[in-house]
Length: 236
Image: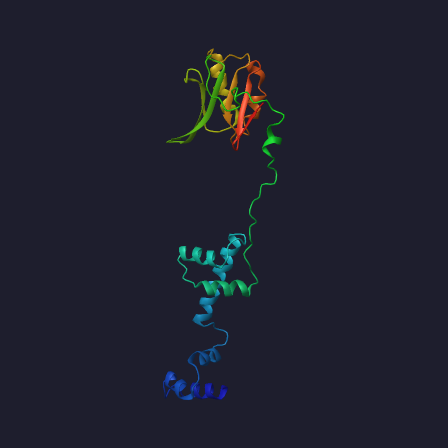
């Protein structure tokens, strides 16, 4: 084969290189690789570029991206590459996508165990939930509402008297910490709307952990806190 290449090199001034390669049945690319062994071909340059792109995305995604996802990401970056090529490059480097385990809740207890030690203060005589009241200032419910503003999200906590259905306390902040609902309760108390001698307040248990800080906040004079979690009533 080298003899053919030497002949082509010797006669290139007399005959076209492509024509000689065709007649001698040798590839033009092989001739140029022989002629310039240290100069990478355009195909080699392209492969090295794609190789670097694939490894870069795989590293940036901390190994969580597989063949299909890397192909999509590179396409969004303007890099045209086939999914099979990505798979081959990953295989050449011994790279595999890390499989994330699905999260599993292992701490959920039975409903009876969750509530057996707690007295439910929001049940009527038939044992069903009762969110009515005939005496103002004794039973309340509350919730947190998300409000979009020009400067970001604000969170509005409200306290509603179950007898009058009036909002008797509210608090607004840029966070959802327990102090948000405490502020609403303090407003209801300070304006005389909350009877601190055994008043009951009901709220869904949310990101504040059921407002546990408030349930232990004794400034209300012994008010009873009622919370609900995943459909099961609970009072404390």
